[in-house]
Image 1 (spheres, rainbow, N blue to C red):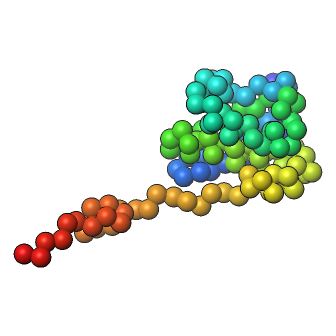
Image 2: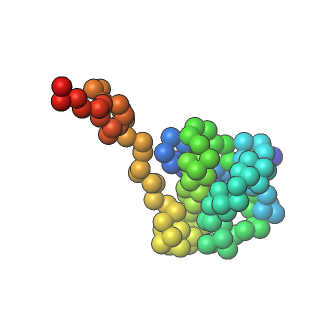
Image 3: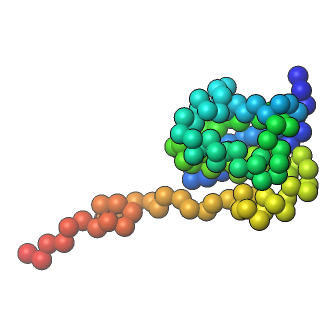
Length: 130
């Protein structure tokens, strides 16, 4: 079993991703499946790879990701956040480029909760004058 060089936890919306970086040839596995198979939409797969492109580490590491919760967009964002954090553990020089591209910042936007007496988070029930 190979040793983990870096471990990162990424979060986005309601998704949480645990990312493990090991020495290898650039293979990315998400929940036991290949990246392109798990994220069939190209933009999500590209989103996950962004921290590797920025730090020029595309074919240096094997990455294993366990992600749960939320949808495709949230999971891809969580994977990117976790991978950026893990790459900072691997090499501290990656920090500046990842920070400048905004990959280390946890996106605080969450779904607003539904309030009582309303149809949704902001939508009211129809007003009746009479």
